[in-house]
Length: 152
Image 1 (cartoon, rainbow, N blue to C red):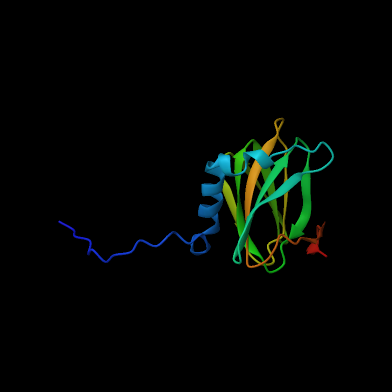
Image 2 (cartoon, one colour; image 1 turned 120 degrees about the vertical axis):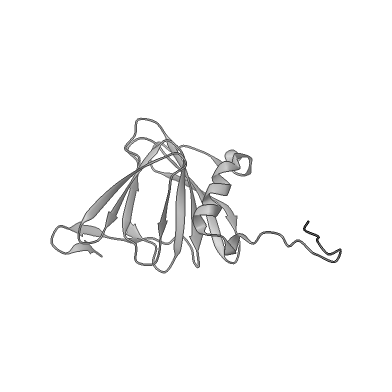
């Protein structure tokens, strides 16, 4: 049998120590924490800051069909995003472009210098949760050159 000493202290979970996908999945599952912020903007992808600590920012995003985040990186920030509902397409760009179709519950991770584009190619609205670590959600724009890959 396992005995816990009487003087044991259970520390609260520190989300900054968790992998950003685990954080995104936990936020995605707890809709009560962000559902009041959810909006759909017919002109552009909607985003709202849900939570901010010294270590990370949590953002809610909604995507109507056809809405996109142009080709970009997040400078020195690392993080992850999880699709809550709908379908999102991520195009990862190096010298080639790799396309990932993401359904509800699926996640992607990025680090510094990771160049990608996210868009809603589906017929229904999509919702996603994004975790940004070690910085903000700054975006550096790129264009894709078929010979040289991503170009600022």
